Image (tube, rainbow, N blue to C red; front, side, top):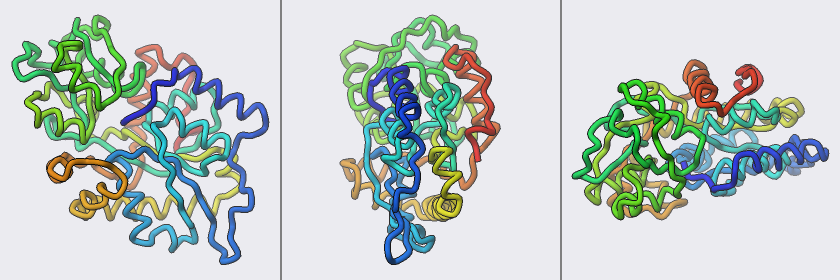
Length: 322
């Protein structure tokens, strides 16, 4: 999932500063209109993962809950997390590991709905590690000692790659990770600047369409039901606006159910908020959109983050999860 290259410590420091300055929490600052609807700003990333919320708005699931939703796009969770903490957004979308890292640093976040999950099918997931067609890298084990591009260092993609490499008998500590934006990874592989790269849709379909080959599905290979992303709010907003949170969660559940049952509608709505080539749009692999957060999968991602030294403090899932 595309995220900016802002260092994680800087992001956490910014969000923490917002909390300490009294700006945190996203309190309800007169967001209820005269018609009785509550206006919400949701921070999202313009990627396939968030298609359900666009469909849910179109289908009227949010308006039925009395919610007037405006979606604001950001480059990634690094911008959305502090935006939610400060109240710029009432809700946001981010990958699970980013939320775990922020929560472990004491940021007052609360997940309220599942966001996106792995298909659980090796070779047919929405995220994978790719290489040149003629690359000597054939299995996850072969990634050991290689240069592997990821969109963000020390996050969900590095921890899951490390996991599948170790499971295959390789030593993940010998991998050299290179931070590149998803759109740039395919070109870096072609030039030989890196040996492999982790990409998600639509860049996975674009990459394989250009002749690259999948090596391993790092999400599916980690857990068949891996909760890759979630929707969240601040703990203060959740405590002050329980009815709004309940309405948002209910609307998201309906949106996830609708997206899972109407893949053609998902593909059609992608063109309204992304610039995906129509051929790629029709051929890309859609993720799963579960209606509930898989607690075991989130715990696994937390354990992997601890194993890689990203989380150094005790992690209590009850603080973050619904």
